[in-house]
Image (cartoon, rainbow, N blue to C red; front, side):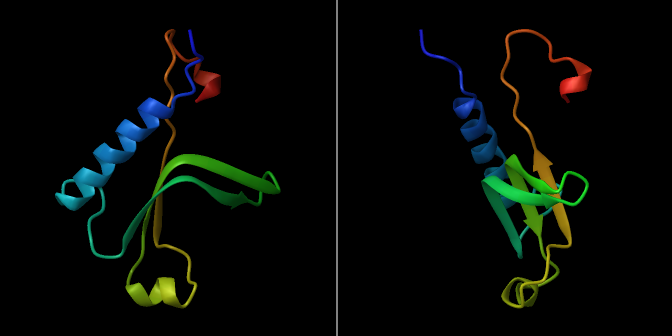
Length: 91
């Protein structure tokens, strides 16, 4: 039996979120929205990068992206695909 890497769940959630965004039925909607898998974000507290399973970035305008300004909002989704309940400390 192959090890569950969580890729199936991540792909499902990514597709679901993308559809919800396109349908204007998510926390943020178009225009100026980007969705990513495994994007790195720098954490000053950890002095290291953190990789998010799925992230959604909302910009005030397309100019923000072109000028290299950070997004106005970042929504991070961590996908956990385990058989047993996940301990609170892991969340």
